[in-house]
Image (cartoon, rainbow, N blue to C red):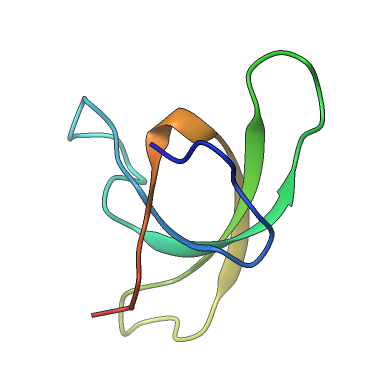
Length: 73
């Protein structure tokens, strides 16, 4: 879990239910909410398959479901 998410940080989606569609995908944080409650973050993912290379999309994820990655490998 990331305590203080920052824009540009490399993260991996990590859920307790491993069948979630975003489980294990790596992306970068685009924006962080500023509310007093749970902090949601906008994460930019890149399509991992070979059919559509380089397709980007954004998902809103609670910061508790993200772990920090140091590198892509």
